[in-house]
Image (tube, rainbow, N blue to C red):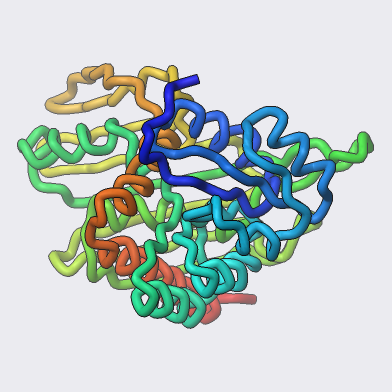
Length: 329
């Protein structure tokens, strides 16, 4: 375990979700600027399992964690429909909030939470960990340097396969919900095409045996006219990547959103009929994101960009959903 900085941010974990156990908390062990001091669950046995593995004090119930003096900030990996409620409670208790994506299920909830965070002078940050993997910064540098000419199209897809049922039956279950999966291509479009995206069209697949919204797609347009084509779903073969098509070539990055720490990303670039593969550096985006959150608090940075990003993303999601409703059968 990495030695912790003496000024490390004291973090409470609000809920024992699978993503916290598998990815976030193991990553925090390598982040010296964060120290887990408490883990809350509705079942104290579950909280105790987490603290035995990752440290901190097990706490029964979320409310009790928010009252603790040894918690400066909370990490919220709860289901999306609970994010806004517990974020508001945490902010009212004077805690900074680092929340899983998608932060809110409505634009109104996002605006309300961001307004309260600003009123209280607290950081509210959405955990889009992939944004803090160095592979995307390198792609942006190469595109800015003219590697593929002027960008004409951004395309991205994220699909999650159905998983075996937890009860041991022959049935299948979803690994994620559609809003969780759709959040990645939508946020990536904002990263590469910038703000002010307009939704030209959107679609949601009719209900299936596995749920009411198994898949969707969206067509976006940047202020300069560049298109964004996005596809996402929760009963698909796995895909997680994006492509930029320019006037002189195109590039493709796989494993763009769920990138293992030791994985060496490979950027595929096609120009003038030749295919080139560029190996990028492995990186630990979960650990990096925790550092971004901690440094913002510890160094008293400007919190406004994080709130702006939450509202901007929620607004784009709202526009996509309204466009898709026009085409619902």
